[in-house]
Length: 75
Image (tube, rainbow, N blue to C red; front, side, top):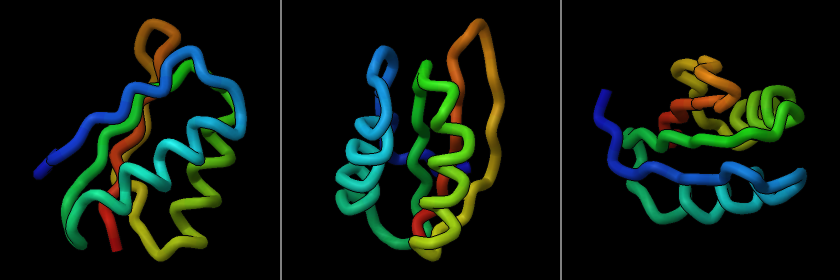
């Protein structure tokens, strides 16, 4: 995976993880991967839906020690 940017959105409540993700995805090139770390459980549904509606690919998602990690490939 070609991760070019890591977004730390830990401790932020909805809708901030999505707002920060949108800003970060605009800073990378098509085909590059953004890694997001958040503690907001709502981000699972929010980021999944946002990724799909934005034409991006959710490559992977995992939870590790209460931190949700997402990898989104910019479309």
